[in-house]
Length: 272
Image (cartoon, rainbow, N blue to C red):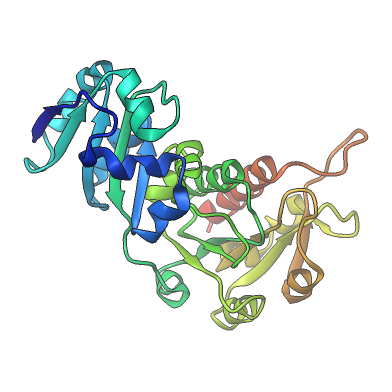
């Protein structure tokens, strides 16, 4: 490990950290940025993704010293003042803890399904906070993989990684393509495709979790913020499920709905 003090935010060695405000450029270069001590610690401990360098303030360096002593001796650790980090990133990174890493090779849907029995499928979920929240619930409740249709946000976007508490770096994901035919492929692989919807005509999830189907191969289909699932996706589902609610509200945001649905199904599957 090389600890290198940086005094100039425009130092060429920090050029890729401008990806904080230019995520498309970062993605085109096959890179990702993770932020925050908890997430960066997870990234370093997991060892699954190659980390190129870290950009830390002095407090973050002190806080991560134990894990840094265990990692690859070739890792460059750049240490800078908050003003230098802001100049390098173009953003006030008040946590002062960033990791620049290489995106792992993309996973094909077929490969993801080969070792999976419980998957989440996202349709047109764009907001990075919602993408990250689903990944966080996916890790918490034993989801084997997340599939994303072509309209979804990038799980390796910095905000999605942060909101997921690093789960996006751990839970495998793959594109669900072509869409919506990918749902037919899931069914052909023996998955029961369950679509989450606020439709009052849908089956209460409390009824479904008591069935044998809930304990087999299950794909939980979750739709975009506000509009929910498209008619094309709903038509490919085997079962439509709703979360029963009281009061005037007829739906939950996707982060909450995903957490409830995945938790209920995990409980059912543990009884298998």
